Length: 337
Image (cartoon, helix red, strand yellow):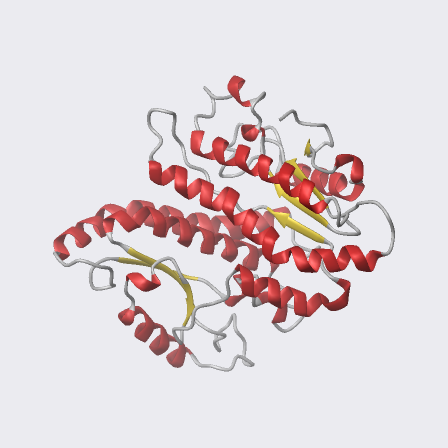
């Protein structure tokens, strides 16, 4: 993990997540035409479908059990992003009855998979074709493998991590995944509001809930008073867009109402979670990474990803009970709610 360069991370993200995003976007009119021409209700690949080829190395429930070392950190992170793209795309395409899933082809004997892989290309392709041909709306938005098995969810990933960390528990949980939808009071759709709230608020809530037992285990195992990320902590990645006092002056430049409202919800989740976790001495706070040069931040952003990440790591490493329930940026400065 520590040997991955910023260039490697950006290259993997551009190819494995942004590439599929732009392909889906450009081909969407043709898919919509096919769905309308079908004349049949429901979803299937005979009607219109998007299949994103992913990997079990992008599953938080499976990755910890993969043979170590697995030297493809940028690949796994980018494919996890692809899985989130699948979930979000599935929600957007539901109204058009265009099916969308992620599928894992298995560990295949290829140049990438190597000679130790247990299945050959023919078995993988035949399996995926069987799965693809059998898909209906019941599988819409899911992550499956070439045998048709659904891959792990949050609850299962928490169980897997718990089995790996054992009596030591989990010291640090970072809720980072989020989606953005543009819109104003007049233009934001109900669907965009639901999607951003489900991902940016309910997602972190469910993750905290499922991982709480192993965070509690870590806090008890530490044996020292006080709070820190060396003991047990939840870090929710937020944004200035979720600040009621800061966002009004930025709104004209960043008209992303669904995103901002959901991040304000995440901030309140942080405050309330901090109250609940206080008795167990589990630190909880919100962290703003800065305006960063990414696909979301754009080229005008003043920060490089490396500067943002290095700053956040410094902040996370210095946290104590004084910052519990707080909202800081990547420099350690307090952000007003």
